[in-house]
Amino acid sequence: MTLATPVRLITALALGAVAALVLAGCGASFDSGVAAPSPTPSARVQAATSPTPSPSGSGSACVNPSTTPSYTLAGARTLAGNLEVKDIKIGTGATAADGNTVQVSYVGSLPNGTVFDNSVNDNGGKPISLTIAAGKVIQGWVEGIPGMKVGGERELVIPPALGYGCTSPSSKIPVNSTLIFTITLVAIG
Image 1 (cartoon, rainbow, N blue to C red):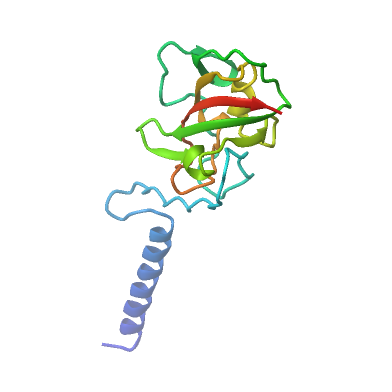
Image 2 (cartoon, rainbow, N blue to C red):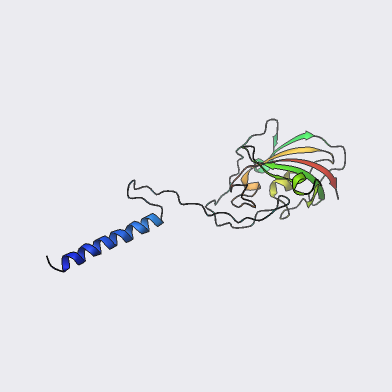
């Protein structure tokens, strides 16, 4: 046995190990020849007291948020972008419009029933004040609240593209989630 044979063997083993590490880092497997899904990096988490617009760019694998909700609200009307709206109670007061500052109470949940936000619990039982405008709240609220009357209660089913999309303000909301909000319009101004 010459010195060249063990050197070749060690070199071949080293190259094989490097190739295995490279393939494993890419999510590939020697067994199936099919790439395994790579883990999704966790989204940035920030505290929110109302549905705030999603930050741009989360670094997650979600590129195009879904425009179709994963939940259908019986008896709802569907607006642009597949936003589902159902008035549970028609109010008798002033009518909310885009750009208004409003006080609302709301509960936000996922299609599986998990409640991710409840303004009554989060704000000491008081309504939340917010402005109905792009960049101030999620787009589903910008399109879903105008037309409500004070004293009214409305349910919104918001597809991911009109909600938080590929980002999440909380670990309670997975990226690309359909959001369900039950909103009571308490006051305008």
